Length: 217
Image (tube, rainbow, N blue to C red; front, side):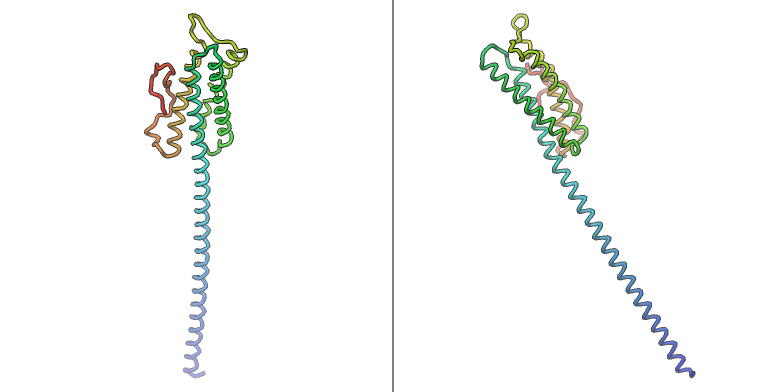
């Protein structure tokens, strides 16, 4: 074999090896690009799914919180009407009292339903604060059975009305629960920073005006 043939053979072999190496490099880079693109798509899909779930939870939490606050507010106001209502013998007094009791029952049941149905999305502190309403509701039911089951007009000594006086401590507790629910709802919805609110219940105002603090709303 002469030198020219040998050199040509070596050059040709080197070119072939180089070509193969180049093709392998292109194939590797292409495979990496495909893999990276797939990873980017998967990551983007995961991010979109996470945003979708967070938006869904936020929507559920917003609606549940808004409804819960509205019902607690309505319950507080209706209870205040009952606590300040002078019980009398007239049909109008009994009719008004019975209407208030009917509304209180509706509001209390609606609050309980939200707590049952939306437990998973309601913030823990807000759930616990609203759940505290169950105690005065149960006490109201006992008072109702005690005073109204037989249509007895509750009149104490010196002509003072017994039932409204017993309702006043209950109203103070309900108002404190309402205040806590307001603060926690505002924190949950981003209306107010947690540092700017007090979530601990306070005695709140009495229906007769002997208030420790002004009522909310």
